[in-house]
Length: 294
Image (tube, rainbow, N blue to C red; front, side, top):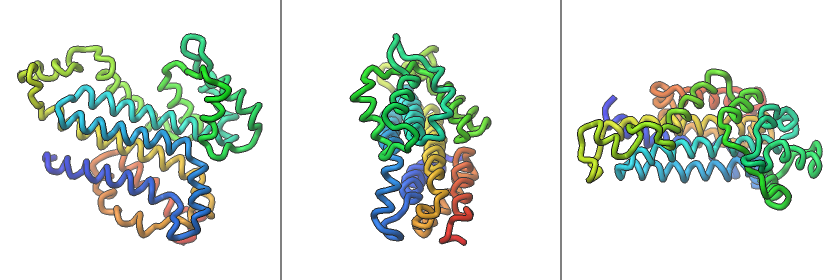
């Protein structure tokens, strides 16, 4: 694949991710604003964390384009981690998920801090069996009554919980976990090749002046596209839980979504994660409750 094609795919990935995540929310142009706001409130916890991930992706791309490749890879890792945590919080707002949070209960608090076990107990006490709406109200509970909430780093256990909830399958679990492990090498700098200087020394470049390393930049751009696809899929997968309800699905503006069909089709041919996105979008189009498509 040529450099021009990779850059074109990068721009398509950025455009498609934003267009799909916004486009697959109920549209004010199709239904009334009340339905849009109602859906938004159901997923505010995820939306907050997703926006954080978007900002981290932007910082990551800027770092890569200015020659700081290891930093750029580390920020991709942070973006991936942020959206996973947002999904966990968003789903804890839904009773059927938090009642089956076995993996989360195994995560201890860092240095005896409170963890998910205490958070689940707090939700049970304050909310009972109701859905938390807006889902970001969970953050208010944590801030006022669980200020020492600080689970130990346990990305694999968070992924295991998503797998047990049926949000991801075993294959996607491995893909995401492998990406996270690879990106963690840059964050922890466990080997000289993950250093900013190491990358330049290994490719016989001037490491004092931070000379650009095209090989690393191209590798990064492909990783950016893949991580963008993973994040897009995960957000849409959580949205799909409520889009199964016809009052939301019938309010999707499918004409707007169709505007990026060509971009999505091209990305899905080149990148497995974007293929998963395309399959999810197609399944929503063909859902029995999709009045607009049936």
